[in-house]
Image (cartoon, rainbow, N blue to C red):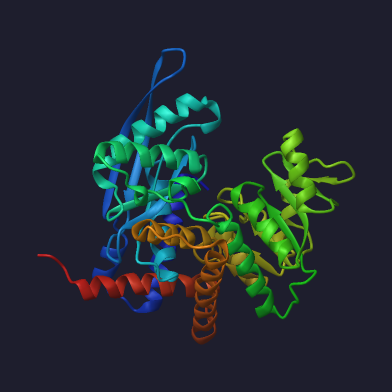
Amino acid sequence: MTTESALDTALSQLKQAVSQLGLSENDWQTLSTPRRVLEVAVPLRRDNGNVEMYRGYRVQYSTTRGPSKGGVRFHPDIDMNETIALAMLMTWKCALTNLPYGGAKGGIAVDAGSLSLTENERLTRRYTSEILPIIGPERDIPAPDVGTDERNMAWMMDTYSVNAGFSVPGVVTGKPIVLGGSLGRTSATGDGVAIAAREALRVKGIDPHGAAVAIQGFGKVGYWGAVACEQMGMKVVAVSDVHGGVTGFQSIDQLWSHFKEHGNINVPGSEKLTNDELLHLKVDVLIPAALADAITEKSAPGIQAKIVVEGANAPTTPEGDAIMKDKGILVVPDILANAGGVIVSYFEWVQDKQNYFWSAEEVKQNLNDILMKSVREVEAMADSKKVTWREAAMMLGVGRVAEAHKLRGLYP
C-alpha cells in the first residue's frame, strides 16, 4: 500500500464510523479535515561541510479536546499524506482512551541511520526551530516515533527552552528521566500491547499462561511487547526484525543478549523464518509490530492466529482486514492496542506540569487501568452493535471528537 492509500484507508475507516454513528455531512466535513498542516524545509550541514535539504512535516489534525499530541518520525518514506493519516489515527486514539488531547504527527523524510550523531542533532534542532511557532505544552506536544528516541526529545526540549528563555520540560514527552521524563515511558507501548493481548485471550476463552505469541518486529514496540508478554506468562515462540525471523529460542532475554553482542537475532540453535512464515505460524496471538501493511490481501489468507494485536500503526490493509473478519480472527486495532505509548506520554506531561513524579508501579497501574477500561468499552460496543473491534474503537473515538465539536460550536 502506498502512502497515498494510507490516507485513503484512514478516510475510509472514518467514513464508515461516521455512517455507523449516523453523523451528518457537516460532521464528516469537520472530522475529515486536518486543523493545521505545516511543511518546512530543513537544511542540514553534513559533517563534510555539504548542505543538504530535507522536507519536514507537522500536522495538527485536531485540537478540539485539548492540545494535539503525536510522534516525530525520521524515515525516508514519510510524506504529507502519511503524516495526515497518522495524525488522524492519533486523534481517534486519544479520544478512545479519553485523554485530553487531539492528534498530531510530524517528521522528516530522512534515513536516520545515515546520520552521524552530530548530524542527527543539527537536523533535530533545525526541524524544531522550523515548527517552533506551533508547538508547546498547551498547543502540541511531540514524542518519539520511528527513527527517533529520547535523545531527539532532549534536543527538541532544549531548543524550545533556549528560545523561550527558561526550561520547558512539558513541550515534549519521551524524554530522558533526568530532564523530566516518566518512569515506564520506554516500555509503555509494548506494555500496552501485552495488556491488549491478555484481554483478547480472555475474550476468546484462552488462558494467557502458555499462550503462543509470534511478534513481527523487534524494535521499541516488539521488544518491550515481547518482554511484557513473557512476564504475563505467555510464550513468545517467534520474533522477526528487518532481516527475518527466528523460532526455537529459549527466551527474549537470550535473543536480546545475542542482539546486543552480534547485531542480529540468529541465536545458535534457533530456526530461521521469513517474515511471511512468521505471519502464518499457528499461534494464539500474532503481533505485527513493525511498519505498515504487514497484513494484506496476499498475506492474510495464510494467517492461522486466533488473535491479531496491532502493535504497529496501520499494519493491516482494508483487504487484509476483510479476510481476517471472514476467518473469525479477533483483531485488536492499532488505535487501542498500541495506545500505551500516548497514555504514558500523557502521564509524563501531567508530571511535568505538576513538577511531581510518580513511581514506576504507579505508572504501570494507571496504564493498566486506562487501557483495561478502553478495552472493555470497545468489547461492549462491538457486542451491542454487532461490529468488529476496529469498527467499535473507531465509533467510540470518532463519536467523542464529534460530540466535543458540537458542544464547542462553530466560531464565529
